[in-house]
Length: 159
Image (cartoon, rainbow, N blue to C red):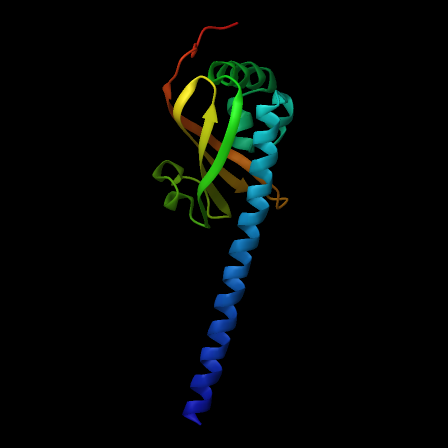
């Protein structure tokens, strides 16, 4: 009898673990779709549309006009977009696992994506997106960051 109970317990554990993995994969797939759409908007100059996909936290920091001007200047300084390759993805319910700076954020669904990117005026360009699922189960951009080496033609001057 103990053996049957143990087998049933193991089967239930495997089922729950499989469901958890399927749910994680599904959440990452949905978050990745939002990230792709967001980057497509940014790289196509559709900055107001990219603002719409920001989290409430970012929208509190940047009104739409400031966002459009700021991201436009950044993208202009990077130069023409050529390519982006995802190199890392992560899903968690504890945001401090992604970044200790997010420790004050509540538990929920968070996704992190890192990319190697190629722009005309930058070298060794990496980009990172952190997304948060909002109360309507929509993925929103919580953080966009980047690192690069200035390449030929790079300029931070406003045009």
